[in-house]
Image (cartoon, rainbow, N blue to C red; front, side, top):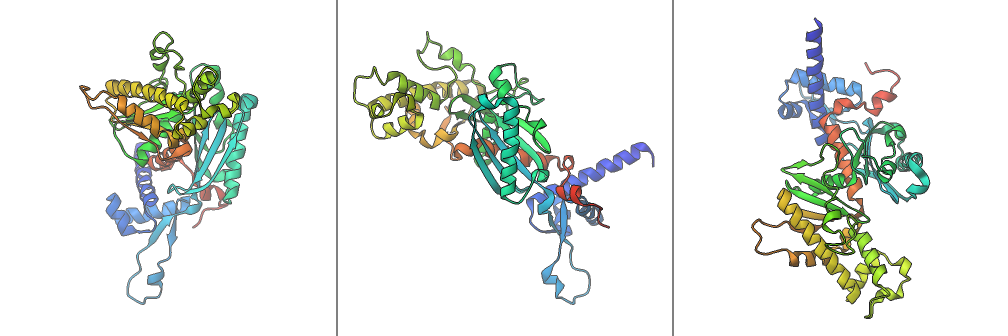
Length: 407
């Protein structure tokens, strides 16, 4: 066999193996016949590939308990399933002030989770990487696994990410993109947090043209247009830098540039608490301790100062909705992040401000139901998609653990 023929044979074997692993990821227990119907491969090929995948640690053969007690002629159908010990995937939301990690099996079932507050400025880049490794180790320990079980870790950070996993120059972005690959075991992918939020929302509620606005301390957007996630050559798509121009002081005073709804609610409340002449529940809270949750709670109780802040946030969202709709023909805008559970009053006001006589349909405004875990759930979704797309790029734990291959 010449080199070209050998290479072609190896490639075909890998293609067939990947097809069988993808099928196994979707099925619990399957027969060779079911795999043949799903993949279009011959019986001999399916059986040969399945034997190879058993040896590689991806599959295990399952005894047919119903057929075991029969005395019928012929051999019972061989049955297979994905080997649970093949490995796990990890998602890590590596924010500025907290880390959240989820460990999931290869079918997406969440096995364990941990969350920890951090001080990124105090930790620095090496400290963030070390803290990530330790948090993931503890989450794995909770479920009886260890770092060698991890096939892939997807890390979400509040910074633009290009195709090489790098962020543009900037002290904050450099700190957030903390060289996680050098600290974590297995393959590591770093992605923008808003993009991961968009991936989570698309999996939860599929939409071909959707903007997911991740808003808390800062504003970021994950943009899906014609079914594809927009990135840009430097990872800058969705960074919302246009807000710095649209809300510059000479246009709309005190709008805060690309600050998120959480930061703006807190800032506006603290800056107006002394000058506001009416009664407000917010005066019962020390000025330096007022946060966004306090503002939203006061608004729900009819507080006029809080209601005014809600109205300003709604006006801001309406302007953003018109811009995104005009430029990208976005059909749906999802407000995501921890603040999403309290955002309905802002959404109601924004909807009331959208022009009814617009030339083009305006986007639907909705709140995410995934809460503060939207980014880390997007990490898991992204990890599972990568494993399913190219399973041959990963080596199962069982194959790495066995001292010798089964005969």
